[in-house]
Image (cartoon, rainbow, N blue to C red; front, side, top):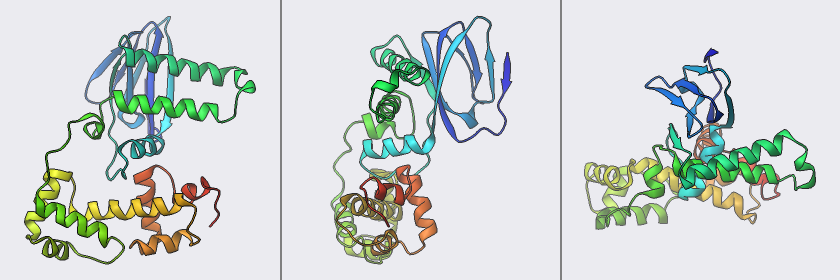
Length: 264
């Protein structure tokens, strides 16, 4: 049986074969999956699926924002760009076999009444553990942040710029001002940020501010509203701030606040 994907939702899917074979086309390459291989890709990337006879498979899907939330915690920073994750899994390796076992445990848990004797939080914890394993073992554009070598020592002027940004993150500032305080030119500063931080100075400053807002929301000590906290960290347009926050952490600011039992 052949299926052609048509305007699929923004989901990331894990395919696992139990028996038989499955073919899929991700727009760049055609993949043939057996019981020894799995595959992870965003649904919008999958153009066709071909199910062979006498096959059995398992598919688990997440909203991409859920993966972004886990990734943000793994790298201990906001996710400042789109998460691009696509790749095969070798299920014969120790990590691959754990992913397969955990996936089937989740499926069995949801497909039976086994959950009646466990905490309601158990499925969420199992799914979260699976997402963590997938992020650690499937290629994506943040993979080096998780597994790559430590970056070389950053230049003194870049370090000075970063220290200035952290010390004054809640105050208005321009890239020209940051460069002046660091004792360098705007062009040199931008080049250094791209080389050592893989982002622009403005993106780095925004990440600092987003992290400041998130810590304030998670602390449970701040009695200010979400809007007031955001403004205190330099975010003046609430709609734009909420969208950037969701993109960076995989949840809305109000969801972060609710996790601490607070109300706005």
